[in-house]
Image 1 (cartoon, rainbow, N blue to C red):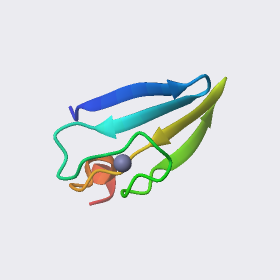
Image 2: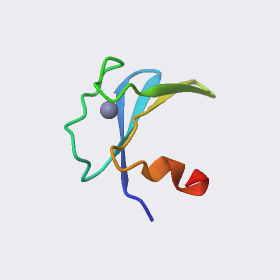
Image 3: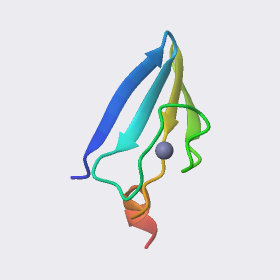
Image 4: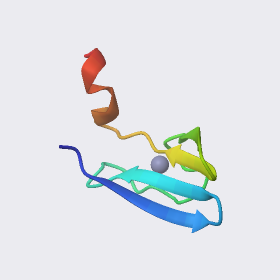
Length: 60
Ligand SMILES: [Zn+2]
């Protein structure tokens, strides 16, 4: 299973960041990977993109 780090950065924002990725992710919406916001109850999850595309395994 891919390893992900989740980190809450403010009252209604959680970042989901791939561990051991090839780049250093920033816990901001401006992270170089271009995190995709997903609305969830109570806030938003910013799903960061991994360089190895692990979140897209089903399409390859
Ligand atoms: Zn990122």
